[in-house]
Image 1 (cartoon, rainbow, N blue to C red):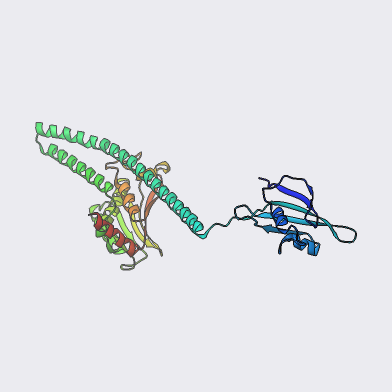
Image 2 (image 1 turned 135 degrees about the vertical axis):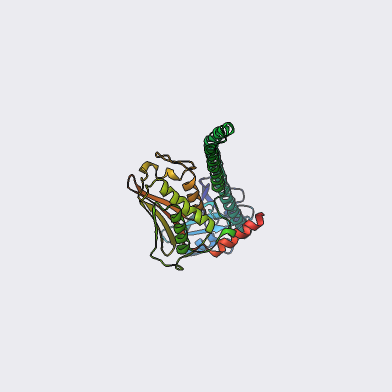
Length: 369
């Protein structure tokens, strides 16, 4: 808002010669000074008017004549005659634009309020993200349960059929069929439980020689499937690569990848397992010369119960469990495949898990029990 101004022309004897504006407020500074100095030869000591009368030079000043009112900006301009004597003085008075000082206590309070607002905003954002994560997990769980119920229907129906046949004709073949169906149903349930509880606990983790452990599991698998040319290779020797891992889960992961290769490879073809390491990562790859995976299915193979265009026997959870287990330890699984030629699935794991994170996770697990 534009400040009001009070202008007038006065004589050196304090007489008002001209007044062209309404008074700024009652008891204006100059009026007050004139009243006090009436009958004197000079204005009050230190008054800007006194300096103009003495120096005959313009003068600007900020005065606070009344403690309960705003400070005033005063501008004085002398009018001189031919001899250089003051004829009159042009005076202009307005409210001064003075920066309001904030008390130190108020400044500290403002800073505290601002920091508290920022903290509450960050907390609200964190809770919002947590709610979104819970909603996503809830939807994922609903979808998993829906798919699981659908997958259970087929083996249960087959089991019921074989059971009726066995009751009508308890022959050896009917018994074998019934037993095999029960085994498959049991494996499906176990895989579903493993998928639901994929992350290994801290108690499962131990220091593992990655090369030696992977080589041993590969050789054991080769004995189970002698019709395939299963081999192991690594540029690193035994005892050169160590990591924190669960031996049981590690064996399950490698077995799932190898069984996947066997399902889609012909007898006599190569299946190669390799271990490599960089400064910060461990890479375990399984390569096969099988049917390959169509490009449009390469990401879907990690979805629960996905079997692809070439349906084979199995629960459809193997690769889903592998990726969930690996990601629970900060790693990932990548696939490279050319349909009709080969498939290579590579596990990427952090080479070292900080001791601090293991301790915190162990403490969290103990407090939850």
